[in-house]
Image (cartoon, rainbow, N blue to C red; front, side, top):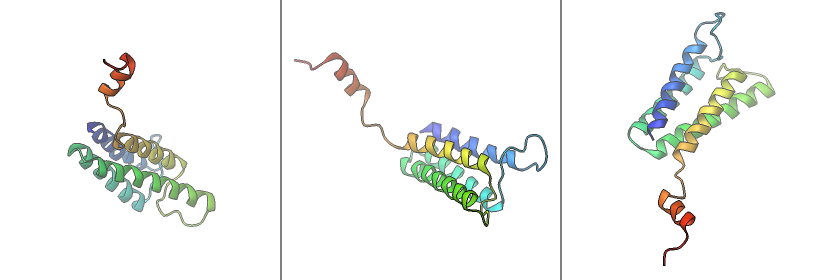
Length: 123
C-alpha cells in the first residue's frame, strides 16, 4: 500500500508540468478545475496508502479513471473543456488510475496458496 503514496506524490508533482505555459517542459494541459480534481485525488491516494486504507486508494483510482473518461469525452465531443486538459492529461489520469486500482484490489491468492499448488497436495 505504500506504493499508493508514491503514485499520489508522483501525480501531485506531475501537475507542475502544467504550470509553465509556453515553456519546453509544459507537457500536461490543466485548468483550475483540473488542478483541483487531480490534487484532491492525489491527496486521497497518499492518505489511503499511508494509512493502509484500500478503499480510499480504490476511490482515488476510480476517480482518476472517471476523470480520464470525462476528459476524453469532452475532447471527442467538443464544447466546454471543464478540466482544461488535453490528451496528455488523459494518459496521465489513465495510467495513475489503473495503477491505483491495481494496488487497491486485493489479490485472491496468497504465497502459501501458490506454494501449495506448485508442490501438490500434502498427504
